[in-house]
Image 1 (spheres, one colour):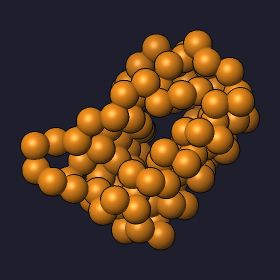
Image 2: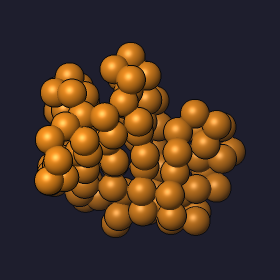
Image 3: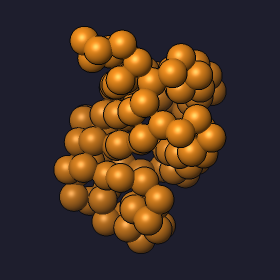
Length: 105
């Protein structure tokens, strides 16, 4: 999974949006982790991970989201995962991730 794009809102350090390419392989998660850590350390107060086009939940995705949540807690950054389809949301609820991460459909 690679970060397809990264954008910030007009106001500095307020919002970072990450969009993922659903067609990439698991070897890309390490790159995405490093990019996410960099974004959090840049001082953004909110990070949105956009999962539009991603339709399955893998252990790699769950591990990535947990890492993102831990980084955000450490950096006092709000994490939102957007464009989650209903089937994925059921998986996140089943795993209990919805208790620690804000998901939006």
